[in-house]
Figure 1 (cartoon, protein in one colour):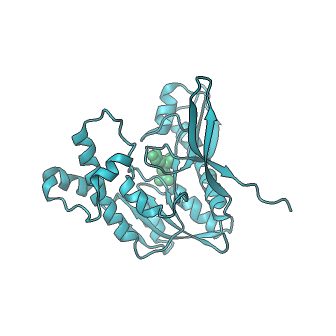
Figure 2 (cartoon, protein in one colour; figure 1 turned 90 degrees about the vertical axis):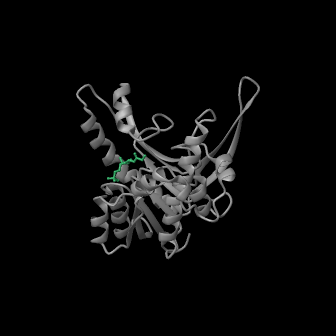
Figure 3 (cartoon, protein in one colour; figure 1 turned 180 degrees about the horizontal axis):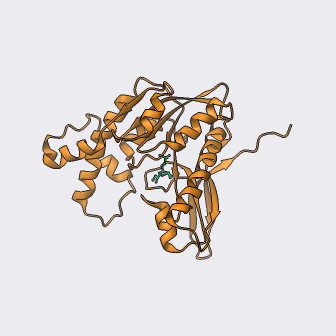
Amino acid sequence: MGGKIRIGALISGGGSNLQAIMDACENGMISGEIVFAGSDNPAASGLEKIRSRRIPTFVVDYGSIIKQFKKGPDKAVLPEDFDLDDVLAKQSLFATDSDPEKVRNFLMTRAVAEAKLLEAMEPYTFDLLVLAGFMRNLTPYFIDRINTVPGSLRIMNIHPALLPAFPGIDGYGDTFRYGCKVGGCTVHFVDYGEDSGPIIGQAAYEITADDTIETIRAKGLKLEWSLYSNCVRLFAEGLLQTVRMTHPLKNGRTYERTVVKITLPPKK
Ligand code: GAR
């Protein structure tokens, strides 16, 4: 990839990962620039820090959209190009035996919010969208409108656990409560499931007897900053490729998965 890549970001909270990526862009480690930062949460403290760097921000208040939907789902204005059957067929956020009404309501509410996100992002062209502590699941409605080139994924997420262990909203808490002796964080491309997309990078830390949930969170977050910046750097340098792999299993079946291959840069 020649020249600087343009990076959009979505956050929900403190935005320390986005700050690390911004620093890495500013100091030249990543050949890129942040072109906008959006949030689902009007109170996200990271927004102020980003505005102070003169990066445009916007908020799509998911909380009030969800409240509104609960009051009168029939009155919710679904995007014109929303196709419930298509999104239902693609999504893997919910298991097949989930309550169908709950699933439909979730996908419809999110489509209302996601259409507003897409509208707010419309003025910016970007190569990569980073989810930096964005605490909302994205649905196929949104994902398909970002990943428009077949086979080329361009939404990245950081998760505070060593996936595929402990997906969900409290990776560090889950790791600690389980009694793991090693914890970590994972950067992956986003697919139609929850924290299930192809893994780009992982970093691990040791958990000792005197660790608490707070010390684990602090150790993990520090690792996240360098891991995320490094994965964005690999993307900016065009070194990430996704490939479909098929492996034979002992039971005669096969295991298939899309994985990330990292090309090593040529030796100088
Ligand atoms: C980070 O620990 C990130 O891994 C986690 O939220 C925190 C955000 O911190 N993300 C998730 O749990 C996503 N499911 P930050 O706002 O300071 O970057």
